Image (cartoon, rainbow, N blue to C red):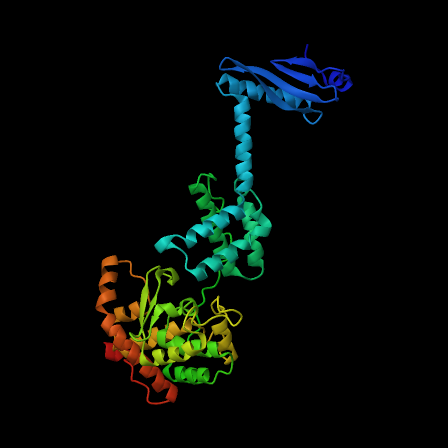
Length: 411
């Protein structure tokens, strides 16, 4: 006879365990302690087994019958409901551990170790910081539970602060994490794929850079008069001579320099294009580095943090130094030394454009062409480095400015 809710509520426990059958192999087990436990007796592969369906009243009669039918369907397909229940618990445990933050940390660790395609240290730090901005909203959520609306709400908090580029980049990074979860069989699809166009597009801005010869001279004289920290002053003085990316300059280590050979070899792991880069050093650059070495050498970072020698100079230090000299961010930035060199070297008409591109460590999609130019233009780059430093000295002194080609000359 089928059970009823009234009958289950009113039944009293006895001195010994008792069973109340409901049909289809399901029964309610009454324990002497007063417990009422749902159980399902079934056979699979010729063996009799027992499946726990929950406890009454948490699991009512209707829910217990639904669970019974689900189990009977599995049995009909030759599946053991007890084993499937164990598998589901394992899956839930794995999914609970596979939170967005856990997979994000795993992905960032992988990108740091990704060989030639790995993130440069500065890129890794920036990316990890941006992803951490999502943690309060979705960091603790199992990645399979995250919906597009959850991600959009999280990045819009960044957008609402006016950080449009950071919001765009954070959404892009989140998509990378989700696609990594898909690739590692922990997620079916990337929930950010339908969010394209949802954020306000940031206005494209260019790094502030001084590219007029007379103003370059003024800047160099201002740097020479810098009255802040000595390490910052030396970094600002060296930057125009080598015109590498600010992160490459900040992370420079003494072991990368051969001052006798006048060359600086930046490891691939520190380069944006993930390829080692050789920088020819002019006499002026070598002299400056000699002065710096007396302060920070002969090991570790060339320009260490003012707090500890185990970390490089802060990424804001050089720009802060330029602000201290009175240059606004739209006038001159640490990255602007590259645009300065590129503009004036090209306008001089003395150097092959490919030699200038190699000096700037810009990528070349053609691997054969890139390999050829790397070797073919080295001698020219060495000569160009010395000419450039001599020209900077000339501008600093306020001497005659080298005549640059005009459009009419080029024609």
